[in-house]
Image (cartoon, rainbow, N blue to C red):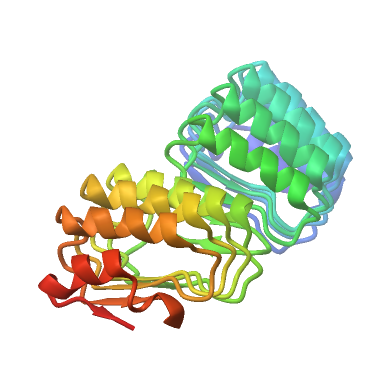
Length: 358
């Protein structure tokens, strides 16, 4: 690697825009030598640098970060550091460099499969809060040691406007619990991460694309989870979705209210089937959904399943009133608990339209 770094420093690769050095044994000494060459101005046109699986630790990344802080690799748009031995000190050094203006054009940062914990992510969040990585669209942090403190700091930075261009965030295989997810949900609810459409967590994964079906049944999802998912829908994720299955979870009124709000904003406009049976949904949640539908949401929905929840007369009346006024114009089948199949308001709203109550 020293010989290669010497060649780089001599200007032999001055026109290089892509450097792929993955799956070698570069280590800290090798990346330090490469960083020194780059600090002298070598490879100034490089836009992609891959150092995946090279046994790079904190000393190596710290050396690279010092070079970046001096202005090296200013054109870099994609930096791949996956599968190394980077921990909190290494990421903190990279964050400090970014806070000083390094990697201002970076669009994709791969830090997955390392040893990063809360301290490292907090340092990165702090840098981003100061304006670092403003162009970043994809951030990969899966398979690390991040917990609630780290993701809470990250969420706080995002709530303040950091990483506004982020479209993809991978966080699965970490140690994030309810407190961290709550912080992330609150940030999303505040309007943060408005471009985020792909998110991977241990409990669920939302990958934007042209999929028409999303099955999230029996995943132990709660209101916090659905608040996050709903925000991704509101951001435009999975715009072609036709079937959404959320049955047999722990979703309550707050979760359904968030989903209803997303639908009212135009999300899930092509949805034809919504399954919410066997959850903890009550009248406030169903009333919020009815209100969204009354405003034109879910106009293509043909099947709505809400049986085995905690819905009572007020919720059913609100839905019946909405349907009587023309909401859910495509609805053909409505699943509800047996005891409500002959509910007067529901029957009066559904029977003239040929909606089957089952």
